[in-house]
Amino acid sequence: MAIGDAPTQVEQQWLTRLILQHNNELPELRRLLEYYEGQQRLSYMHPELMDTLDERVRQVVINWPRLVVDALEERIDLQGFRLGGQPKLDRDLDHVAQYNDLDAGYQQAHVTAMVMKRAYAIVGANPRPADAQYPLVTIESPLEVHVELDPATRRVIAAIKRWHDSTPDGEVRYFITLYLPDYTVTYVVSRESGGYIEVSRDDHGLGEVLVVPIVNRPQLWAPLGTSELADVIPLSDAACKIATDMMISAEFHAMPRRWALGFDEDDFTDADGKKVSVWQTIAGKIWSTSKTKKDDGVEVGQFNEADLTNFHNTLRALATQVSTVAGLALHHLGYSSDNPASADGIRAAEARHVKRAERRIKGFETAWERIMRLVMLVRDGSVPDSARWMETAWADAATPTFAQKSDAVVKLYQADKLVPRRMARRTLGYTQTQIADMEREDREDVTRAVYDPAAETGPKAEPAAADQQRRSPVPAGSASG
Image (cartoon, rainbow, N blue to C red; front, side, top):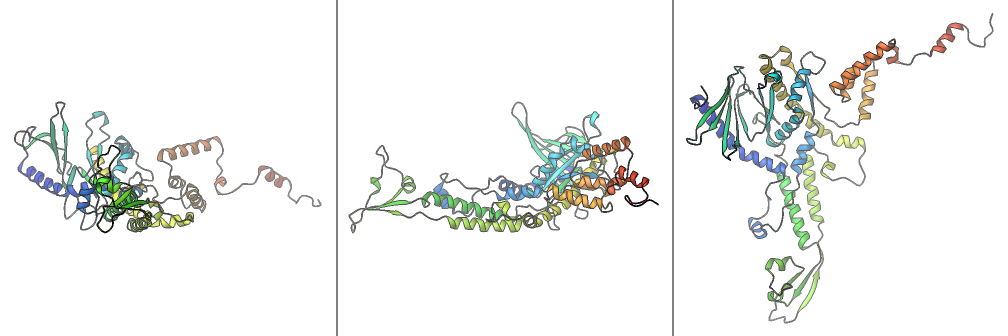
């Protein structure tokens, strides 16, 4: 195939198949993203009431979906990769991650996966010859990328990415890239025929599709993941409806209302003498009725203001349900008791949320290890055996204080060196660069003075006391014979 050619029959079949699958899933993915962004439509309100209120009443959005996702993602921090049998994090892979700005990419991938079931990473050769040792790794949205898995191995066998751009003269061009095991090809949609025209091709011959899904909560019935928002969305809809009703009630009932009997609709005018609308009459401070044959007089009174406690109690009940299904402590949702919980109580309340974060880490680390193996494959043409049992290093998902963590590490280090010094420093959260600086200073200290192993295991006798013992073999003050 060459530039300007149409897809082959096999390529066209893959394009048609993957596009249909992607199109079927896009509405649900967009709906999930709307909930995370707080842009969903108000639910549980009668359509006629919505038409009547029109834009006069704004929806109150209680964005619990964003809170559930962000609180979980904040516990997940990827620190690096360690090849099998190696005590240190791999510096070359760390350089690749830094080159591709994956410090931010990790967070973007995990948030996207939790919201829309999965994110994607695409690996490719660096087009800049001077940076060939740093393959490109880009984090992609499921709104643009879709893959098909082998039902036997659950590995990616084909993938597409769709996007568009604009030319300087304002023309919009639509592109699609097809990823297959031995090559990657990009097409542009023809303006005349609507078909695909090849614009670039990469015959890498690596035998791997260079697209890796980063899946949240994969299941046997959903190998491409499930959203963290699935259980929260109905509760969030109910909370937004209750909060909106509370604001409407606050407008009409939270303040005392005056009523008048014996007035006609024509009696209500504005400052210019013009008749006010029905809505202005309802939303005003006076409710009235017209005169009747039975009662020709007038009467004025006032309703008592309404208590909004029922709305508050309902919102708290819904927040409790969100706390249950999301594993969040209730204080994360803004509810706390009059007596603040102790530190141990807070940690106990967060135990389930920490365990949930650790489960998500187990799912994400498989994807990141596959991504780094593809980086090695693109960079070196092969994957070393040590990378086949690569280990991903993550920060502790729990939230102990630094003092608590330091005390635990010191005790483990002093207890017959149960924890090596390097691991102790890594546990305290020091980066690889900081640990290297500490070890260099340790070596410099050894060269400046005689190294005394007893200094690490316990106190030593003072030199003056030791000399006195050598000069005085008998206790001081005893009679000399």
